Length: 117
Length: 111
Image (cartoon, rainbow over the protein chains, first blue to last red):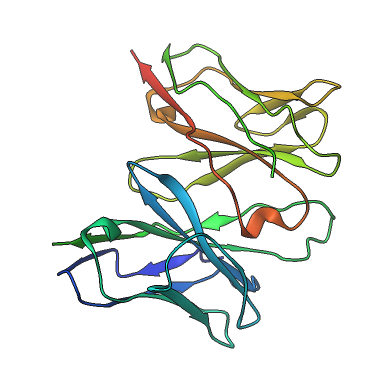
């Protein structure tokens, strides 16, 4: 089956602009999570959506927001871009209620490389 | 979530077995141990997950001692393509959707 698809792969924006990134999860996965990866801070959790509702949120300013649609596709938005927002943004999908119990794996997309100039 | 500690980097020659140890002293009773692999400019990829003793799949083995305060990822006969960053994570059921990554171990494989 198809993996997690993120679009666009690369993006260049200027400071002050806003940007919207898209993520299509694996078919059947209803949980979508977003992560930011930078050389200085590593991989950091942004937020998670399940059934169109934000369930968990990381420690990021309100300029970072997201939403999930009824087909589980998700978008994240960053407003008033700053140079420090330059990063690889990763989306992951997972099963919320694993049939075997315990934890399950998260499937990551290729990411969107955002450069703010 | 339990904090993990792993070496920042490791070097290996192609064909050798590589063992990466992760320390997680505060692991909770319900926590699982999961390892991810990440290549540059790609998303992390699940390698293996375990709760106790030993787990083996087609790419790696995971050894977990009885006290579960550490775990060792074993990669048999590494190749150049195994050069990547390896992350050790611990978390309970339902945490696959909000993973906490540490600094990871950068493995460099050379000829």
